[in-house]
Image (tube, rainbow, N blue to C red; front, side, top):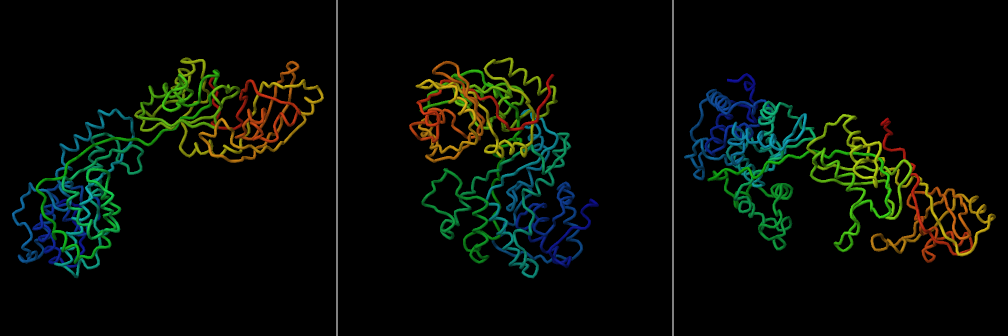
Amino acid sequence: MDASMEQMASFADEDSTTADIITCLEQCGCCPRCIFRFLGEKNPSSFKCYPEAIKEALNDMKKRSIVKPESCDNTDVDMSRGDGQPCPACLGILQQYLDKPFLTKIKDYVTDAEYEFKSFLCSLTVPVCVLIRERSVLVHLREKFKAVYESVTESDIPRVKDVWKWTAGPLLGDSLGVPFDQKSNFDIAITFNYPKTFKECEIFLDFQPEVFKRRKFKRGQGELFNRANVGKALKDMTDQKLRRVFQTPPTIPKVACECESITCTREPLYIAGRYNKHNRSLSQTPWFVDGVRKSESSVEEKICDNLQKHFKYSDSKFSASGREDVDVLMLGTGRPFVVELLDPHKVTFSKAAILNIQKEINTASSEVQVRDLQIVTKEATNKLKEGEMEKTKTYLAHCWSSDVLSAEKLEEISAMTNIVLQQKTPVRVLHRRPLATRERTVYTMSAEKIDDHHFKLNLETQAGTYIKEFVHGDFGRTTPNMSTLTGTECDILQLDVLAVLLDWPEHIDDS
């Protein structure tokens, strides 16, 4: 017998009782690994052994005492079970889905998916009716071996998915050439399906109406039964009630559950940088109105189209430190941004490789230029939002005035500091933002004459200030405004963002 199995655990104190429990579980049709589970074994190394070694261990345990033939005398038990039949507790998951052909199938899928990874974990979705079947086995054991199982609960029995991982994880690791690590950011997800799951769970529709709302559910639409609500229903159900509505011990299934899918996913990767925009008809993100595209491209697309070629992600989420209007340029050192790359296949890039990607983006279009491109952690992206309201921005506005502004008036304007504005949501954005009055501050500004009716206005403001509305007043919705401050009607002709004063991400010298 394998040395790792010599100290097999058991809920029972006596060898004779343990032997009787083994025989009872065998007669119920349980597979060797499930017998280990219901005996109380929790040592992962015990489950990693080959089935033949587990059977040998069980036989040795039985030989330690004389087993009573009547130990599991129950007319409902199918005594004709053969080794080829699915286990009634795990539905075959700990039998045929731990063999070499299935593990090779997983390896081939992962290899064909062409992911880059240094470790992996496995996620299993197990048919929810397994919970009922496990409880049914436990109820049967409580009836036959009350002294042993009276205080044993489902939480004391290792879960099917855990036992599968304990066994398959190291084997897959050897096959893939990387370690199995439950904290890995690369996940191999395996979903098992059992065709009679709904039928077996239907017992709860009448006995647990407060948990399962039958009238709102149509078969085949959504998940009426899940691990959370079935687990709650079972917790509230007595052993006596379960015996009345479900076969105890559970019947041996005619077919094993099927592997419905194998999929791979990786945790998101985050790419940060700063962008400049040099086109007054380019939106920051794709712009649609009533399903109709309003701009040919966007800052997001010009950046992300190039990233996709290298990182091979399935989708992306673009975020920036605020946004400029379509007709506003983003100049200076640019606006900080981050792109969340969902399920990227490629993740390892040197600083030189990232710099080359940055050059590709800048070469592809003169309208959008990026700098300081880099891979950052998820935690680091919080700085983008944390500085959202604390950062300041500087602007250059080209303005018009109805009356001629004197040099004295321009000097007076330039001397103003810390002007507190009350800004109602602008009319132009009411369709997408709630009506509210926001208090914003213009820290400094300076006015420079262009001609009798035109002047430049340099401003440093609190983030979130509506500059256009500060100039023209937005029908009195922003107060004070340049019209009230100058005493004459003013309007804005052109606006540029000169700087977003947020020290993020880290500056990278690409010289």
